[in-house]
Amino acid sequence: MGAKTWMLVYSTENASKALAAGQPHDRSASTRLAETLFPSERLVPMPGGDLSDTNPPDNEVFIGCYPGVAVVAAKEFAIDKPSQLPKHFLSAAPYQFAYLHAMHSMVDWFAFAVWRAGELQHH
Image 1 (cartoon, rainbow, N blue to C red):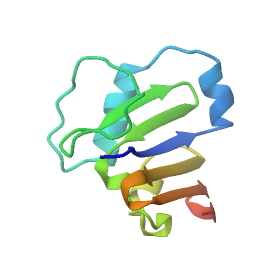
Image 2 (cartoon, one colour):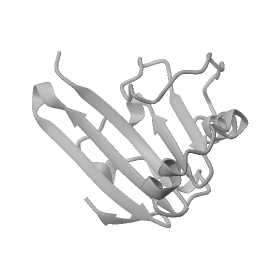
Image 3 (spheres, rainbow, N blue to C red):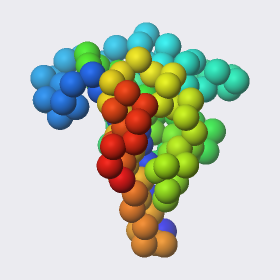
């Protein structure tokens, strides 16, 4: 089965610094972000968990919002060509930076990209 992981991290500043601050999870911000990113989906909040699993089932989205940073794991990010990420994922969220991390070890691929203000910077 191998390892699979895919996530999009949004930030207004340095994401690692924001996460290292240890601020609490903002559940209502997570709900708002889910509604913004997946407007045509019927969303049902689930009990709390953690973001150590970034390969959610196809019908689930894992989101954690913290001051200055949000982590979103969803099947839509399981892509090996970051330039093909649908633009609405970059324009919908109110953050300056977006980082894509996607990996599937069984088929031996990894993708990483950085966007700033919706413009692809590195991939």
